[in-house]
Image: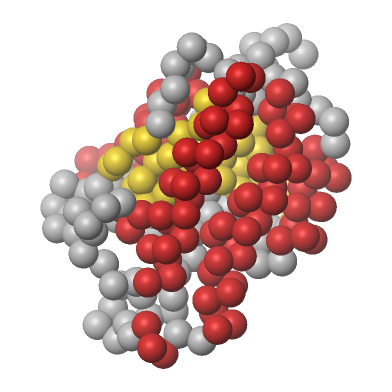
Length: 239
């Protein structure tokens, strides 16, 4: 393999944005590892790692075993679950159980921290490693959302990035956060953007827009640090 071939590790690949990243970002000659609890369909280039991210120790061990000692060029932590009644008029923080709170924190944050910690040596082996954390507009200052636990974890993700940058600065490993708004994640990546825009009445971000942002971060040299990209939907009144 030449140096131009990258090794990707992408979390949350069974559907939505994670699936789109696997389909649209790596080249056919790249090596792609994908983590999810449910097996993805029809992605022949993918080395699938079955892991339940609500169980951090097990999930981290499974991923580390699969990756072994090889280099990692791009790590994308595309994970984010929210409360069951989130984004609805029925949402009431007082009703959220301790079990649900712990599950959200484990998946969104604890497994993220432990995974990156276990893979730092792999990232150092790359000529130009990039870490991309997929955040949310619920993790930026003064948003209007009530979803307490989801918001707390997405703010925490930005905290992870701030400290991780300082830890990895000497190794020229870039750490960026993509704070995304409402996505048209029910559509496949090969749906035409114009079709998505018309059907969603311009209210949701096409996945293709996010792919452009990811490709931009990956394409930058190791002299650059893309800290954060904030991408709400144009009609989003929450931020």
